[in-house]
Length: 434
Image (tube, rainbow, N blue to C red):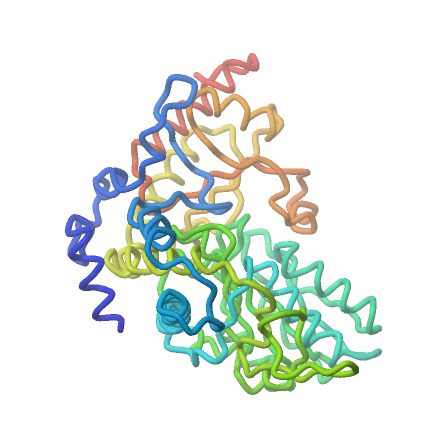
C-alpha cells in the first residue's frame, strides 16, 4: 500500500519527490503547492509561523476533499449501493494507511476521532475511570498540553487517584533522574507528550514506557507535535495509547487518530454511544460492535478522513526523514538569528538534535500578545499565549510566550522576516535595537 501511495504522490507532485533538495530553497519549492501562502496580509507576504497550532493544506488535499464530495459522497458502513460501498472502502483504506504511516500498527486499534484531544479524553474516560481507584497514581509531566493533563485531573478527582509530575529542567528537558522515585507500584498510568508544543523538546518516550511497564502501568502518549515532524514508530515506542491530529500534518481539521493496543480496546466500554457503534439494541440493554467501530459513534467525518490520505501521500513523497533534516537545518538557523538579537529569552533545548522547530520566546519589554499583534502587521503569523500549558508557563516563570513554529513550507526568508518584525516591534514600543 505504501509503495502505491508513493507512486501516486510522486506522479502528482514530482517536484517534491524523495530526492528533493534539503537545502534552504526547499521551502520555496514546496510553498507553491499551498494556495493560502500566496495571500498578502496588511500588504505583505504571508509568513505563516503558527504550525504547532495548525498547518496549511496543499492543493492535493483541497482537491481530494472536493473530489470526494463530487464523486463519492455517501454514508459509510450502511449502504448497499455503489457510492456507499466506495465511501466505506475509502474510509477503511485510510484507516489502514494511517496504521502503516505510524509504524505498521494493527488497524483494529486505529480509532478515528475529531482530534487528539478527543482521543486522549476517550482513554481517560473509557479506560481511566474504569480502572483507577483510590491510592492509584497517575504520572504526568510538567510540560503536558492541557489535552493530556485535564482529562487525568478529572479522572483522578472522580476515582480518588493521585497525580504526580516529572519535573522540567532549566534546559527544557525532563528530569529523567527523578523517574525511578516517581514511578512506583501504585502507578497505573503514565501520560507523556512525545514532543512539547512550547519547548519543542522530544522526550525519551521509549525509555519512559519501558520503566512504566515494569511497574504494570499503562502508557498514554500525546504524539500530536511529533508525527508531523519525524518518522514515528508507535510499536517501537511500546506505548499502549498514542494520539495525534490530521490538521497539524497538512490534513483537514476535524480528524484525529487514537492508536491503541487492540487487547486494551477490547476490554473498554464505549466513550460515546449512538448509531454505528452497536451490535444489538434492546429496550433495556445493548451490545457493542467490534473494535475500532465501537468507539466511533454517529456519522464520522468521512470526507476529511478521505482527504487526510492525500496529506499522508504528500508527506510520504517528501520523506519523513527529509522533513526532519530540513526542519533541523532551519531550526538551527532560526536559533542563531534569534540569539543574535540579544533581547529575547528563548525556551527549550539549545541544540537541534533533541528538539523540533518550536521557538518560544519572551521579550521582557513587550507582552507576547502585543508582540503578536505588531508582528501581524508585518505579515508574520505567530502564536502568543500560554499555549494550553499553564503549569509549564509557571515553571518557566512567565505568564505567556510568543511562539514561532516551523514546517515544511518555511524557509530562511521566513526566519529573516520574523527577525525583522521582532526588531520592528521593539522600535514601535520605543525600545530600538542597535
